[in-house]
Amino acid sequence: MNDSLTNDAGRGHSSATLSEASGLAVALSPEIRSLWAGARLCGPAFTVQGAGGDNLALHHAVLQAPPGSVLVADLGGARFGHWGEILTVAAQHRGIVGLLIDGGVRDAAETEALGFPVFSRNNAILGTRKDFRGVFGRPVRVGGITVRSGDLVVGDVDGVVALPADDTDRILDRADARVAHENDLVKQLREGRSTLDLYDFETAGR
Image 1 (tube, helix red, strand yellow):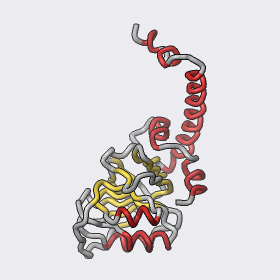
Image 2 (tube, rainbow, N blue to C red; image 1 turned 45 degrees about the vertical axis):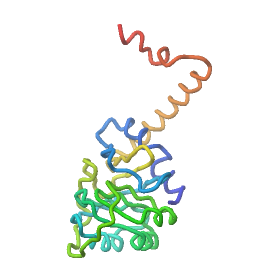
Image 3 (spheres, one colour; image 1 turned 180 degrees about the horizontal axis):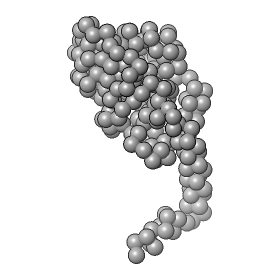
Image 4 (cartoon, rainbow, N blue to C red; image 1 turned 30 degrees about the horizontal axis):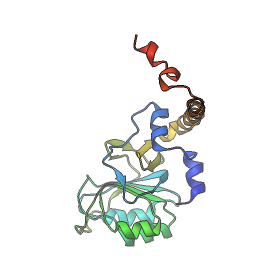
């Protein structure tokens, strides 16, 4: 994934920082994890409603999604190999920057070698049918969170968040402030202060 896109879209913030800064229920289920170690997902969502065990919707989505977008697909958590090396190559050629899918995927080694970030509920090798063309651009439910096209999706080693498009700027500004504050706390800890002192836990417990 293009690092400049990551920095522009999410200002380089982690999923954990964005979740805490949002004050909203934006964190997906921890069962949604990266397909390969070190993957980072960041970009505006293009939503796909598919059917479990059927990946025709994903083939159509690759043609419809705008460059720079993240495919966000609801496949009902089904344990099938809905996505693999072939779709990854096709998606990269179209300028798609990642996949977030509530369902199974396969070809982990090949996808990692291509550097394409995929976050899924499971890995599975069962083949799929090609019957349902899918529904695009409507809200989908992924990892217990409703995601709409245009929402900012950020995923990393800690998990995935989906930030509402109309609230992203506020969340990113709060994340900037949170990181600055935490950097100051780290500096004070290295100077010998304690966490009990900095957070005033002793007083809070009285």
